[in-house]
Length: 499
Image (cartoon, rainbow, N blue to C red; front, side, top):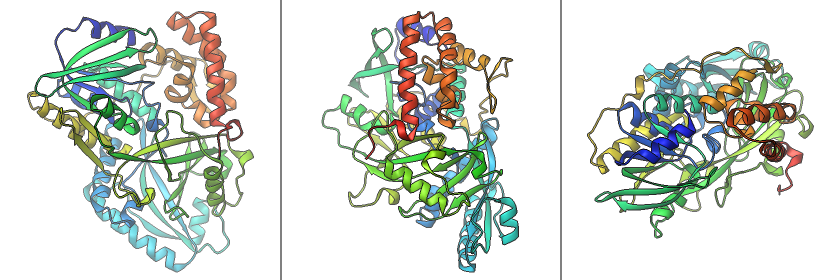
């Protein structure tokens, strides 16, 4: 992907695009990949960086969702389990099987969760990746040496999937680009005019140069995630709200809290969710919460209450109780949920997705979860093709491999993580990274893993970016200042806006 070349393509194109996709998260990039792989001419516009919102702030799991099974959302679980197997098959470099253990403190727990996970296995059917089983107290301690042992009677083991969300998203975007999609980040949509009868015109601004562009399209897909209602409002002032919002937070701890290749699933918390303690990039990832929020935010941040909740809940299962001083990094993501009755708790709202078609023909795809991004994209592209009068072409993404980035020799960036200086250069040259944060938060995962440790790498990253992008010393200084502010948001004591 080359941003400058893509803007040249945009400026020189006179005929309409088949589909313009708004939003560069999992769903939007999934739509671009789906459409391009069918042979449609597709343009994707992202207001910030690819995956800079909720899609890089997940729990790093591809799963059916044990909690949704408990709530009776069988269709969602079955669909997600099917999609889980597709991701594991198509992107094995970014996704893998992961063993989860539910620590049980009594026979009742063993039976309840053992039976429930057998149902989970049955729903997976042909797409299953490993059966569940009840294990003894001794075996549970062997697999989870840091679990609280007082009262422990045994455990229930099952298998789900883990992935690197931002890495998979960037690789999806690169594959979409190889198949002809035109993708640009830092492109802010300002207006959407026209209709399905007359065709659409989408105007947007290149945030780097302030240059204005207007493109024509047969169809437009709004995949803007938590900002989908804002995009609908640009096209239609009378658009009703379709989504509500829930914030989930995660913290990262040292590996000593979970020195194993197995994850802990805490089956029920005070807010009705499950909590996970997961091995991730040589560290321990703990999350998530389910806190209703009134409005979307470009930079959501964990509150003190949420951090305390995660620490307290994890501390009930980990022999060493984590404290705020142990947090290496923390972040928040906001989920778009389909709006239903206002009195329904966020944790009870379905994670299913929905299509909304505005009177002018704008297609909005929202809700859902990372695991089901491919199916969401398929539904959205099918509808967009119908509305735009495009030739109907079969979706091929069920069997579409997403290649990994090539391995390039370079100097290591961090002793504990597999990134090099060559990864920074590739991020700029081939993956449209434009800022220090783009590189250290999403092209690599250094910032979300250990916010303090990454500070020492920021100047080198700014130097490489400046050289590759042809920027001057003043630009690099501005990047350092901006990144310092970003680091503070990933540190619990660096955020002054907590309640």
